[in-house]
Length: 85
Image 1 (cartoon, rainbow, N blue to C red):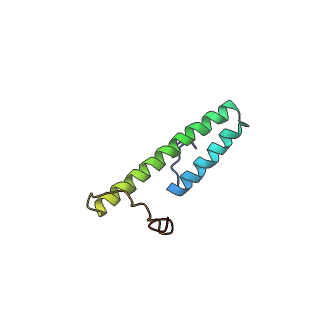
Image 2 (cartoon, rainbow, N blue to C red; image 1 turned 90 degrees about the vertical axis):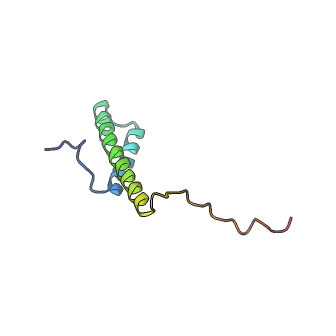
Image 3 (tube, rainbow, N blue to C red; image 1 turned 180 degrees about the vertical axis):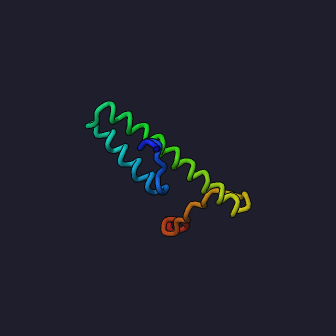
């Protein structure tokens, strides 16, 4: 049986939410050293899951976009540009 630290999250969003809760708990400073270490260990599992999920999504986008991945264009500002001095 897998330990709680190595249990795979149900989704990227679930992993991110759990990771955020762990960070808040650790930042509050109200946990014992043993519990903090367990939370840190779980956090590393969650972080790795999120990074791998994002890398897979990026790879899919590269495939769909013909390996032409590019930065998004910055939105044009229409109200302040090209107007009166």
